[in-house]
Length: 370
View 1: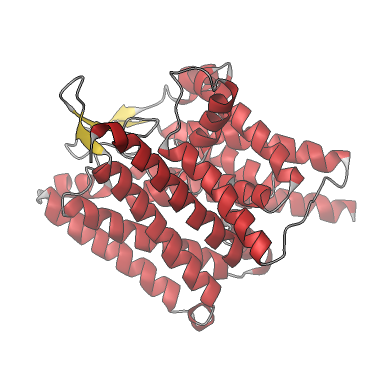
View 2: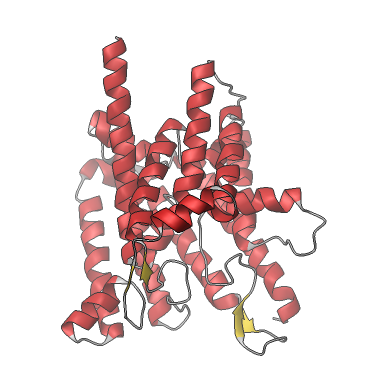
């Protein structure tokens, strides 16, 4: 494919994959915040198993691409050698708390916007503004001068991935360690997921886990293989059509912010549609299509001032936390974890912990008021 058309092809692929993600998430009620809530409040692991199934599929497929030479995992935002542990923990916890207050993570917010939820539209606005301020504005001072200062550097050729660390400690070949680690983690997740008979008989949860995992793999293949070509200006291999100029897959904190920036500076020739931005609009489109087909499109608004303020605070915390943690429940919890990056695992657990603690606090406050 000519280099001039490469970025355009990557962008259209992002729109298509995002549309599939939005449609499936809407149809199957795939929600990471809901998964944590189900466990904390009801002890129901159904939607969490769907999330873990998506992780298993993504981990196996992503590392298969890397092993076959279709993806260089060192060329991602997740696998760098610098490990800002405090940013992962604090950012993840803030995102988890924010998605609880906002009634859903970044992906769920986009899904709800597509189905007519005006509350989520407000959350999306504050989510994007907060993310942009954390990347390039005043909140970035806190990120750069406070949260990213406590960090250490890992001296591994394959970056901060679990196979690289274990292979170095055991003196094993990195590719062999990648196969072993992927097999163990993937198999363990699949056994845990499918050992539950109720989950095995739940079509929507199975469908969501498999298809969303495949969407993550598709994103890596499009940006990491199809979008990789020699840049005619520098004569170096470059990744076309992504914001980071690296391989990417589904993530929504940065792309939501870049979407607002693009719409605000549309006439600026330095701004362009990218894979992540297109995927963001695709999720909204996919959700809208499902809501029309299922006759579930409904306009929903805030019930009170407190309800609005809570959702606004949630959006702000998600934007700040998502940037600091280098991703959201999809960006770190699926895409990042699929690379087996240590920081992604830390961010993932911090997001879950932040959400669970916030839910417990909300429940305690509700009981006290009652």
